[in-house]
Length: 182
Image (cartoon, rainbow, N blue to C red; front, side, top):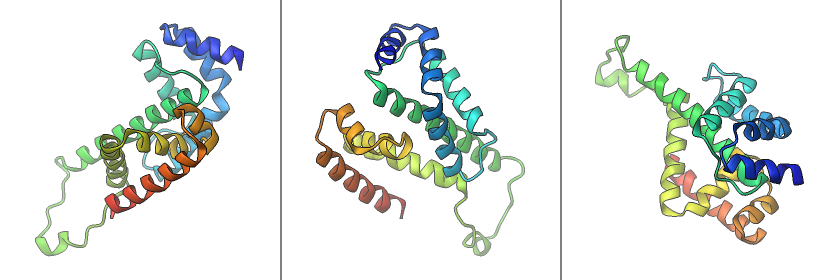
């Protein structure tokens, strides 16, 4: 854990090598997070789990330095980066669908069209961003629990609150997201 703290401090100073070593040390956990992202994307991305981990690594290195304090913050941040990669891909797919190959429908047939997986991913992303503007901590709890797979204790430690507060925040966030996605 001391190595992890040292690497995080080096990554904060912009050391790309430290980011690489962080990815090496936490690869199994990052792979698990990426697997959940790919599974939740329901096969819409062309990336596999390993590809998503590597894409997130490239994106983090390109940023120059990390603003994370510890392991839970790093995993939550990496999960957010992976989510943004999946959402960007979904948006590109939606944009392509609106292009020259668009199907023209009458009003009657358009009513039977259901929401695609790409649209659902973008809707969840937008709802989570909206939640973040209302209560940033609730959005962080969702990202850390759902996307990074951290438990309540790890989230409480990262946010500096009690475990019970995290449990209440999780419940509030779930209710808000459920209502937003209806």
